[in-house]
Length: 115
Image (cartoon, rainbow, N blue to C red; front, side):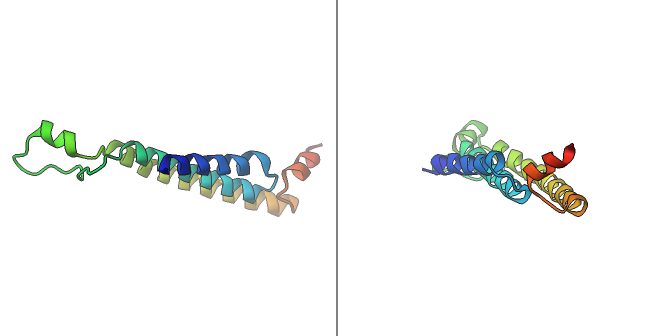
């Protein structure tokens, strides 16, 4: 069920990113799509009844690896969140500059201004 939710979020984000002509709506679509990708990555490392990936002293490594949740997708998502935040700040800053210069955030009007 959660895989369907992540696919739905990616689909809604792609819709907003590709079919909307307003820069702010495109940014919102990017953020929604990114949330769907993050959810999918977290779900890949999920294990039913899994334990946190922290070993206790003297515990058998093979037995622990069979019970623990995979920490790599969690680390990848944390890194992706930081990178996505930087991209979001850049997109918002560029949108503000475009609005200050051209007084519009509509893609069709901006293409017409190109000449």
